Length: 605
Ligand code: GCB
Image 1 (cartoon, rainbow, N blue to C red):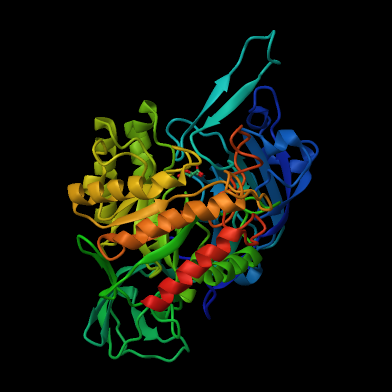
Image 2 (cartoon, rainbow, N blue to C red; image 1 turned 180 degrees about the horizontal axis):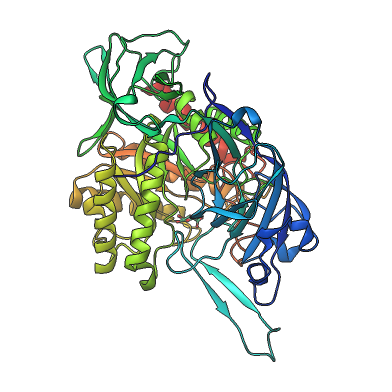
């Protein structure tokens, strides 16, 4: 079994949710041993009594908040704490503390007692805190966060020490990351404290199918807490978007409910006047708990040449993107989420990839409600070194995939799972690892969403594409190879696509292609890094896409939606500039070109 559910903390007539977002106290463990905080047991008292603290916003990455270079580039333990109260009105409730994401490793104490730890960023974790909180006095929550990446973290990384004292100061080291984005860290998503009844809805899984004009909704509810077994009686109904009940009542933990003349969930480009239709499964435990689980009715499936949503052919014209913004780094905020969806809509984008880690739940909610499809990806980027393929690494990767599935399984926007980005997929080691991970993912998802990974290897050497349902290839023809030569793109890409399809007989997506572009830099004829080069380059890809769109190409995703920051590297001028938008989410010339194409694709389908 999967173990516990990780339902989003939602308000209801029986539940209360409060946020612990805001300014926390913060202190990095700068000691030469890097773990003096553990020797001195910083969790046993307020952080301000251990030394100087600074205010740190939650949610946010801590890296870009201050002017301190050592904090921006910090590797090791940082500490957060704050005070909070738990209302006396919650005394007989089950009280939960939930973190949306802490990157990378987190340990949590309440009033000096450890309550949980979690490995891996970008995914939520929670625990019950009744036995450690006071309902009549102030409480303290302390969080220790470590962003060190090792060969068996997901994503992996290594630390390299230089001990030549003639050349390097004592303790000098660099963190080598096998990824092209800044390793932002901290409490990057919201922290919630919430209360449920003692007998509560622990988990809900919803699978939908369509029969004629009926929507067929199969659900299963997992109970938790006191009142399990026969005492755990539920009343389940389905509500439409306006809150009207549209189903009969079921009193079973598992059942199938038919909605006549169901309104289906569609991507906005397939049904511009009614995209993203969401129903709600209302689960009421008779002893009190009520949970409202949103879901959509839609199906996805693939043939050898096509991708279908609700049995209609679907062509993905999307973007790859990061969660990345000035100051907050990877910290989630609603203004950026809202702006990004407006810009995606403006661009004519009908889907995106959560490169290269799971995105915030609040963002995913908008994809569901606005009708965007999502290729939902684990943080498995850079699995390229022999020591990344250990059994421990694999079992952690499986656990992460399990957490991602648990979090996002009921989302209609999620049309594919991506298990990894650009791993070593052309070795026996890679084959064994990903075969196992893909089989594990298939077992998890009863709804049988297609599975994929982002492949940068060649059709004749790759050994993982055989296991996936849709082949996604990342290609930088005219950029990382034959730089400046746009005239090779159509030839090379056509040859590549045809060979992949001939060998595997599966649908394909060109899932990354792009050219770094500094806005305002112009040159005619085009020259790399100019706005002219990015658009000339894109036009060559577009011509090739159009040739295969009616054959077996089921999508294109430009890299990237917006510019984003990376580590300091000679080929990155303050970050990666392959965005069609700047990091401030304003268009480059390429955005107008992409928009023209994508809007014409909307109108042609
Ligand atoms: C890739 C990676 C992506 C990089 C991109 C680039 O293949 O998947 O993470 O940012 O190339 O711009 O180099």
